Length: 214
Image (tube, rainbow, N blue to C red; front, side):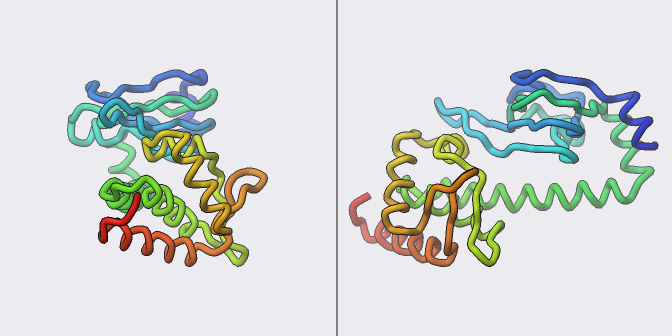
């Protein structure tokens, strides 16, 4: 099926703040982002934790139509969006008719499994400092270049992703800045040396294992 035909038949516009689906609801459609950004979040206790933000070309909601399970998270439009809305029959026909689409989905799902492993590893850390440093270290290592890694994140973004108190996250970021492991930068946070940040995480984990102050 041609891209123009797909867009004509299945594209819909959603305004910023629109909830595409909520955690626990039955799912009958999946979505492909053509324009805009969609935030995926999940409630953990009393906290709504942001898992990821999806942009152009990425898809969401596929698991519910693949295994007929309730939605595992909530999807909300972070800005005005144009999305392809595909039911199970249409999605299956696309996958059967295009090995390229099937391969792309496999690669995306594999990446999401890796991300889930990183999040589980982070949740096993009790110390808030270690959780913040672990998260920043992972993000930095994935995006590191010759001059380190510029992360398009604010303190509020980090708090939302980790489900931590924003004030506590701000304190941790301030301490990392004083230690010259991190510095504010236009557009986000700059990690000059991801390896040094990883060494600091090792120190925090040793401290936690030894029962040192948190």
